[in-house]
Length: 253
Length: 249
Image 1 (tube, helix red, strand yellow):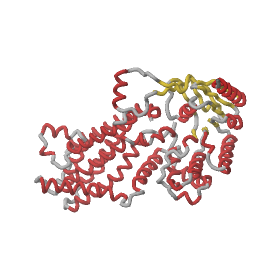
Image 2: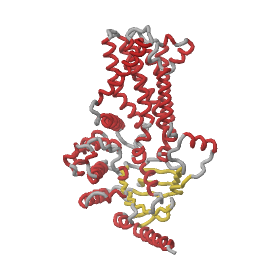
Image 3: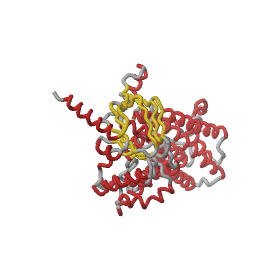
Image 4: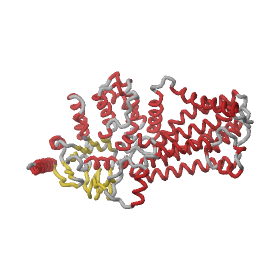
């Protein structure tokens, strides 16, 4: 029913999201640098000064956890409310509905790019050096984007029918902060649980990032396979659920 | 060629569909059944050939908006089929996606993308859109600085540049000053002359009579009458007077 220019639409939705978020702030995009830096400083203080910790280069170590986690939780939460917040569009324009959560996630990804830059800069400042395995990084971040899009499609669609979805997502993110190895190393997790960790793409991404940045090694194959598999399955699931639920968006908004 | 075709279309809405929380949802799931559905359109069939100007009349809640949203493709019907051939532009979409913090120009691009214009077409039409809207230098200012008249003018300017095959016009034309209203009416007549299909929705029976050759009369979701605009409008007005008369003691 909608014969438009999909890329032009996505670009405009992303730009709108980005502009409206920053136009009235004095510090603008610097906020996406301030937030992870503050988190890094606090966690480094707590886990080196209060609780002793054997990890070297702890700020880099912890930032490898903070950057994927903050992007995921922020993009997931805002993707979940994207359909409801655009109710006026759904009620008036036959625009492809899945463009809304996807544009929302991609809009948040602009911060992710800035934060990844920050992570790499801090890593270099701690003399980790550049290695060939850095070439893996774009593919790894791509997986996270795909995974978040899947989550946003499912929860964004469900949120239309069940308005407390937002709170479910917020609680899930709080839990996730503890079950993703952000401030602790996977080696301290008992072996039988460590296996399960790898099925969480966010945890898998954190582990792969540390292997590349801190150990200068190639991320392990089985870990990567799980990361790719779970991320893309989530996207396919999200797409399927969304297509099923979107028929009645108009009635419920 | 038929551009709009409704075949035994029924559309219902759930009565408890707003703001449902988990609790309500669960209890509904447990109870089963779709108790309390509101029938917005009941077994409607009609077809509109290309180039015809059709008015839709009816009281509030008669199903006019639902009919439009089906034509635009915002929601699927529960039963029957809706077939629409060609690009639809609806003035009920006026200013869709407008954001007060974005400049006029940014909003034009956003709105054009939503209405289905390509990047190239939008760039080509941009100057003409700005000129038609008459907002002038304000195009680089945030939308929140606009007067309500300027807002509507800008929105209308984008809508008419979408080059639709089917134009849906509703009450929006009552905004703006005399000069702009004249401009809008001219634009609509121009569409008509180009052989485009027009669907005109109004409470005002006179406007329908002036502009349309054919009219549909909806009442409580049913198609009461479909025919020559003059006849339908006089029947509709007669009925209106009758029901007002009945209401008196």
